Each structure stands twice: as structure tokens, then as C-alpha cells.
Length: 111
Length: 141
Ligand SMILES: Nc1ncnc2c1ncn2[C@@H]1O[C@H](COP(=O)(O)OP(=O)(O)OP(=O)(O)O)[C@@H](O)[C@H]1O
Ligand SMILES: [Mg+2]
Image (cartoon, rainbow over all chains, first blue to last red; front, side, top):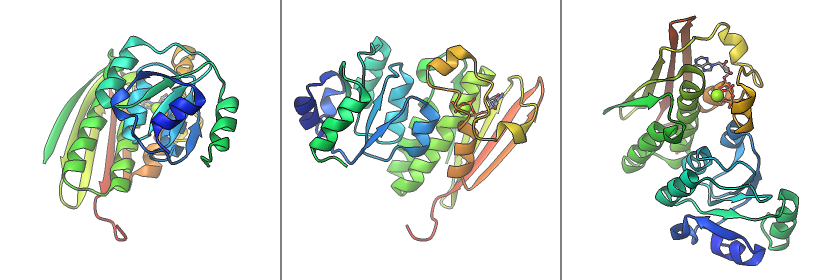
């Protein structure tokens, strides 16, 4: 499954990183504490968080995550968008919360 | 190969820049991706600590065929009790920083876990030096 597939199926808005929507997805990681994410998120994961400042891009990029879903309507800063475009990290936004997103992702067969 | 970076203590935006550059170089050198990942994690944590706790500093990277040796030197407040700082969950981060998702007290434990050797020397009021070694060709890769 690719990032563009989940955008469509989960009705997510792409706010950055359009050039990388072909990224393959392995699994999902949820978390808002950056050093916790650093330690545990696996490569190619979808990362669901409510953090939206620019450092999420560095984390995702260093870990080769497939995309970031910023949940619960958290606003994404302009710097974050710009950096994510440069680093080619898709940022997807939604009003849904992590639990809802995960239910839908499991339904799509992502373990 | 030697690389140097200055980490700006005021510029939150650029935090992670040194880690990101080194990651690119290692990729070009053909280093295994799991080793690059460990280096990226350890470096990012050290870099972000310099920004959050020490107002920036210098990073010196020395890459040889055998290993990568990275030195982070800052002139910040220093760490009073290094053993305590190394404990998971220990953090002096302000509420403002915590709201941004930092301050879990996991940075130093991550550096230890993902490096082959970690050495921290610090003097109160003078600064902190963090040295990280990761071997580039461990058996099994
Ligand atoms: N370069 C430094 N200069 C001064 N103090 C430091 C430095 N690096 C770490 N510390 C001290 O050690 C504590 C623990 O660091 P650690 O990286 O483990 O956690 P943190 O940075 O507070 O949170 P996290 O890394 O999980 O976001 C810090 O809260 C800080 O008090
Ligand atoms: Mg830290």
C-alpha cells in the first residue's frame, strides 16, 4: 500500500510532500514525544501525531518514515510545510483522532 | 573524511541539519541502512540537546572505513549529575519545550542504545562534550 492510497481511502488532505506520495507503507506508529518516536518508529511507517512544528520533519526524514499524519485538526506551520517539501516527506492532515485512523488503517489491512 | 557543523542555538528550524547531512554522506558511501539509522538517531538526539539545553555548539565528524566518531561540544550550562541525566525519563526541559514533544528524558538513553560507545564529559558553567562512536562494518551486515 502507498501513501497516496491511504490519502484517498482515509480522506486525508495532503499539505506537503506531494512528490513522495508513492512511498510504500510498512506499519503505523503513534506518538507525540519526539525522542520516543526516534527510538521506536520503524522505517516506512506512517507516523500519527498531533505535533505539527518543523522538527517532526527532521524526525521523519532521519528515520525514513513514509509519511506523517497530523491528527485532530492540528494546524501545520508554514515552515513545517516548506521543510517537508524540501525533504520530500508527505504531511497529511485530518480532523480524525488517532484511534479512528488506526481503525481505518487496520480495516485496509495495514498491520 | 572530516566534516564540521555549527549548530545554531536559536534556530529551532535547523535542528537536525548536521544529522541529515551526515546521513546523506553515509548513504553515498554505501554504509548499511540499519547502521545509518543508528547514527542518525544518536546524532539527532545530541544535536537537539545542544539546541534545547546548551544554546548550540559545534559538531565534528570523523568518518573512517572502520567507524564514525562524532564529537558534540557546547559551551552551555553543563550537566551536574551525568548518571542522573542518563536515566530514562529524567529531564529538565521547560513546559514550553515539553509542549513541542521534547523532554521525555529519552535522548541520552537513545544515544547510548544506538551507539557503540558514548562518552559524556561536562563541567558546570563551562559546557558539555558528547562523544559517540558507531562501527560501520559490524559482522552480519
Ligand atoms: N548538552 C547539554 N547541556 C546541558 N544539559 C544537557 C545537555 N544534554 C542533556 N542535558 C541534560 O540532561 C537531561 C536529559 O537529557 P535527555 O536528552 O535524555 O532528555 P531531554 O532532552 O530532557 O528530553 P528528550 O531528549 O526526551 O526530548 C536534559 O533534560 C538536560 O537537563
Ligand atoms: Mg534530549
